[in-house]
Length: 300
Length: 300
Image 1 (cartoon, rainbow over the protein chains, first blue to last red):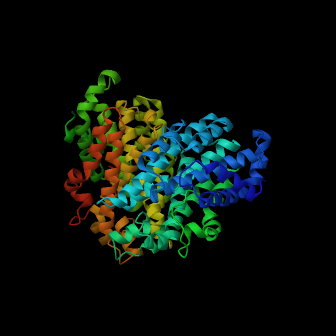
Image 2 (image 1 turned 180 degrees about the vertical axis):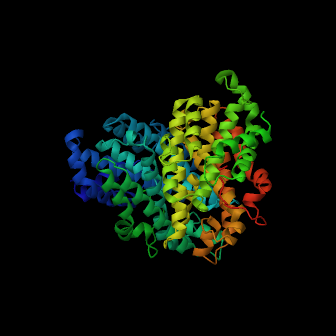
Image 3 (image 1 turned 90 degrees about the vertical axis):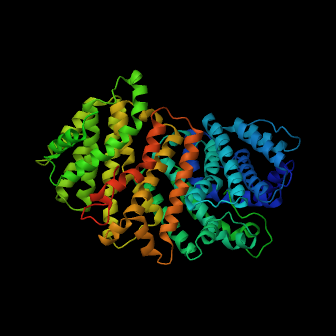
């Protein structure tokens, strides 16, 4: 496996053309990406007989880290206004269509899309990745817009958007594209789509529960706990959300036990359930309230 | 259109073999079914050029009413214990597989399944109706079991189950089977599946909000408002659920405006959104707290 320092250097190198791209985006991407790959490596090795894709392949690993870093950067572009609105629109267009960016700079976008298109084990995953990117960008925009507007979302609307803005589908799709996880075929199964919704809701709630102190002190209202408390001050919002999280986790385990998904999906989903405990605690700059770090929403 | 009195008589006639089948099940079925058909009749007439299915065809209308009556009866079989557990298991097996019932009596089940199989405009709708029936029965069982057990569901788990136990998918699928609404093809579209989930959640919340007084006095805990108040006594549960209902309705209108579904789906979905106001108020025996009526959950 590529050394983390070397990987970090390469992700930073790639991110140079992206205005506002920060060390933090690369650090978080390598940190989270490494954790996920570590957890599914045995399964990736097993299926490599079929796919011919080496779990240790540096090119594949770097492409994965770069996509994760891109997701973090896009999140902060919305939350922190790292780039101008017209730049963001051009970036979104480029990333969602797989075209060069219409505005100068941001060459990293086209570079990454071209490399993912070339590396795709199944071309359908690349088409889906573009669609997932469009959904992710739209959800970030919608989340940002609603906190600025006069109308509050219902909990249901918030969570519906939050399932897209957590970007877990993007993470899975990118892994599938790079290591041949056959996600395009699996998406035809209702139970698989349900798993995607459940794990995304779990990620969203973990993220919001974990980040609520940072979000509150940052005046960030795009958080389930904060939204509920604003609307229903008497409601035990954190207890409610913890129960919701437990409920989604039970539902996920139920469907995973009933359905058989090919490797590495079992270990991948488990890794994503557990990522909160492992990852948030080590991501000081992004999620700890005693830091001066930037955004609080996580795409991975 | 068949006269309501005549239709009622025919549904009652058919229901005779089903132990516990009551006038109420037939009345509610004709009442609700008539409302739905009335709302979509112009669209059904428009597509009849293609389908050759007359919106006024008595055989089709009666099959629809009978399926609705069956859903009401199954609901009460679970809630009120109208039949023995082993009878219910045999009935569910017969209805979900399209086979004759293994236990004597209940001939109406096989009669209805055979007639729907024969009437199916698209055979895929019949297969899906059997699957929807299995989901409905499983959801009724699960809902009943959890109120009896020691563990409380989370709101998310409750609503997930409530989306199946409201049986709107069954209603749509039966209409599609009888009048060629092409639901099997539409189900392949993610936006259509989202519409199904949204309208079902709306129906569930309307039903629970409307029936909460009856449910409370009947000691029935399988109701979102009661479940939330049991878990979080300080929570403004009714306000929260009304906001959720409004949120789901906004989401539904958004996706219906963005997507184009062929007739009669627009008017059908609108009819189901509005059914609460029109229907619950006239369904004295089932939903009004001043009545001695039985169950409180509605499949239509």
